[in-house]
Image (cartoon, rainbow, N blue to C red; front, side, top):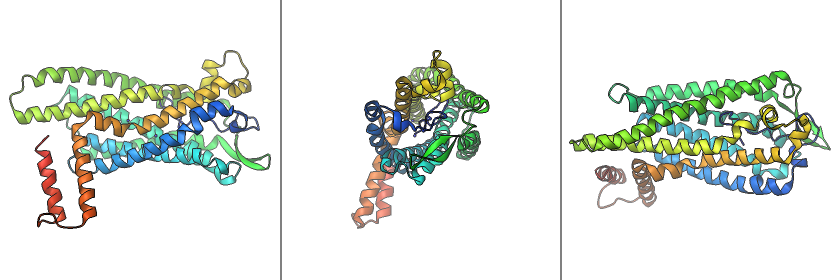
Length: 362
């Protein structure tokens, strides 16, 4: 149900350097925990997630998934794919460390743009859970639409981009030891950035956490109520429609649960917040260099990769309609590859017949 660090504080973990020091995190971090929790599994998870999100986009483009919630899921797959792609190049291009291009990429693409993509994913989940909650509470009055969904997606994209503008001013490329590396700016070490960090934590982390907690509770209650109501339905069509909505709600609940588990650590890893909570009287640079802080950053970022990679599995596990759409997509791919008429009918005709046949089985 996307590198970036922070959900409730959604942003890529600040792993680029040690605060204001001239040493990069990569130069000082213990290679063993970094390899175990980041550089080895990270690219593997990113590639897996990229493939899954490409499949998500292909399946969600099928005609039987044209309801409003699937519009949000399409945007979510796109933002997760972008996030994982940026993260993969950050992790995989270690041989270019010390080059100007790699330092520029880490600062302005991985750290800044990557946070934007992940923040978008977070708020898309929030908006979708709110919509589903309203539908569960007022199924006869609330009418979601694709046009409204597209408007909300644009609003989320614009606001998340604006909120993350300060991140573009946190680091600059500097020459260190005959190489180019990210170096903290005075703004990154200032009181202003400290205040911005807490603002981000409230608006991009803790507020979404609270909203999703409330809406998810309502959705879970709605699932139990819907199960009881289905027993009293006499119309087969009404029963089928209600069952389809229950599947979609169950899918969203699963996405939110995974989302919570994978993003909670990222709410506390940004330097100012982590230092305030876990500093325990240590000096700033002492804490930033501490193995426990570095390990928290590695694990939190890795969990974000996992979160952005899991949705395809969740959709297949909890949503029969998504599985049906995937079958249609795979069959269409097979028919397209064959490029020959089947049974005297055109390829398009065969695909349409297949779709109609499978839809009657829902």
